[in-house]
Length: 338
Image (cartoon, rainbow, N blue to C red; front, side, top):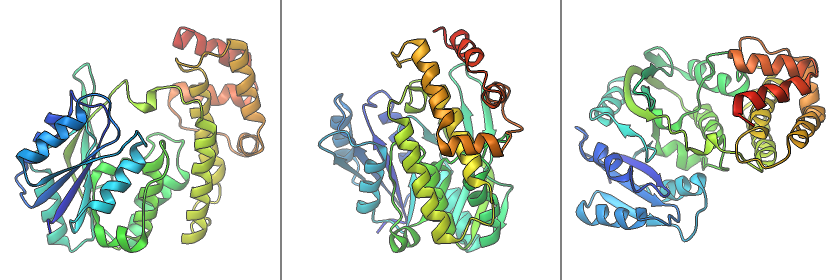
């Protein structure tokens, strides 16, 4: 049994795959296995996965018959992983070469069941910026909830928003297996996974060393129009509600629903005006007005005034609060070249 199982979902990523795998093979920590989950790719990704697995017995390739989405791919990886600890890696990103060694050593020295690291944001214009999870240190259950769970629960507006990136952590396989923690959905699935996992973690050690290289990909799913976003977000909130009930989180952030619904509404509005939505402009505006009139969003608008947003989102929130939907539409027309 390997110490660490690294899980990589792969979907039509032939131009990234080899470099991603190379970043694992060059780790200074050697007791790992790598699971490549080909999610029904139509390009050469599946073939490359098999080639890499044939050349290195620490690599195993799995193939889904059809594209099922990143959650199903990760769940397959969780089911097949043999390690005592799990880590995730996105196929278009890279590990720093001392990533696994640093995480493993921090865990051993602290006696923690979980480890977190900083990461390095990288953009196409060659700019870069490190981003931390929490200040370096060792955290108990209450510290974990204050630093990770509660921000994910009900602090989704004020900048900087805590990012629900799952690949910044080393996870206890025992916690995941015993609590049957899995992924669901194609969007915001990371946040729920992190919330549930860290409601069960007992001790976390954090390093501020950026051990993960996150490439901001403008063609990723988060930048495309999602026709079913409202259904996806509604399901997300239902699952979040269930976690709040199960782990007694409601009193920690009493307005978590309004805060989360405001955040979801702002995403939904941006999504409505995104490229790829073929509705006429007037229909887009009407859809936004209908969204804002839905009970859960109307309640959030009435009871919570967002503060501390990024400048663009603050402008959108102010226009929504004032029901200036025509001006909002013109702003997005200008911004997106509609």
